[in-house]
Image 1 (tube, rainbow, N blue to C red):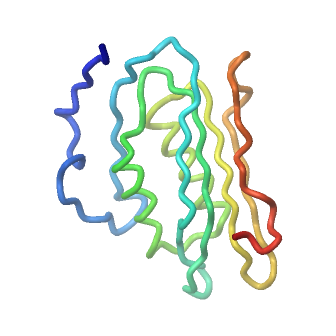
Image 2 (cartoon, rainbow, N blue to C red; image 1 turned 90 degrees about the horizontal axis):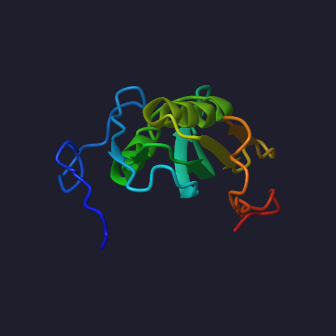
Length: 155
């Protein structure tokens, strides 16, 4: 039988929710992991992430892959989606967006391990890919490749 998860503390799940005006205002929520003590990888993929160039105001696009090994908590997926959407009208460089996303999740969850791969589409003819992780993953955990090719006309 599947364990029950108490979702009574969640404010967004099952509700109509506005997207925050900025990533700093966005609320990330967490739920307890029913498998604390088991090392497994959770992956979120955002193939249509957008933010704004802080210099020109033009849109920037990325394919973002977030992998983490939970400890006690899981990120609630609707809150993550709305958090990522909050970047749509936010001006920041690719590196800043990518690292900020990862650090906010780490701050919320304190996972055993997390990595982010942010594969940004070219602006000015140069793609920028940003990679960061919290350290070495636990031994024996299967870590699939992120599956996003380096830029060759991604599609």
